[in-house]
Image 1 (cartoon, rainbow, N blue to C red):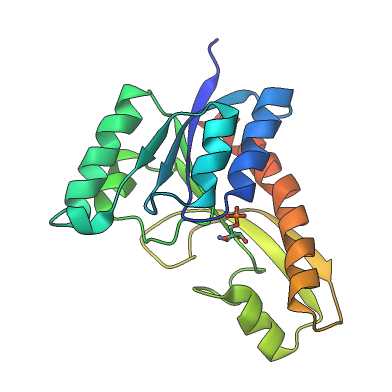
Image 2: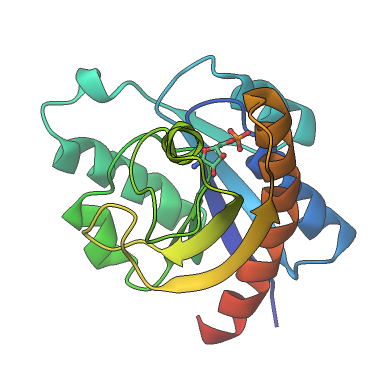
Length: 190
Ligand code: GRF
């Protein structure tokens, strides 16, 4: 059977994109990353994609009259590459109904908190401000709610300090392990 095909959507740094590509190349995940999509042309993820030889779609949402229009454009690329699974990895945009209806149960996201705590933007900052002692990472299905879809995998991180850089480094390191694990749980179901 041919490998399942993954598209990764990212808006920024792309370290999770790279971790997913690495897991596929090394065979930890039995799939192939066939597309990198970014809504921020020139974001660092595009350098990572070029280095990894992964085709890219770079677009500016404001060049389209509506979310439906740019999601239809994205669907064209996703269909062309026969994408089975979409992994959001630092994609700073809410997925609209066009993509949600086209890929039911096939869009995942990673969020840097133990959901349902600290949904939305700057989850790490929210958790630090709260003074939590256990942080974490969640991979979940994407639905129409904000960070609200069914949870696939979670990992907890104990941290009692207040150095944001240290904490974020710990969170990222854990994300790079958890996302491939979550993908492995989902692949047999799609
Ligand atoms: C990650 O912390 C992820 O949880 C959040 O955005 C960040 C993306 O990091 N959704 P990177 O671009 O993959 O390095």
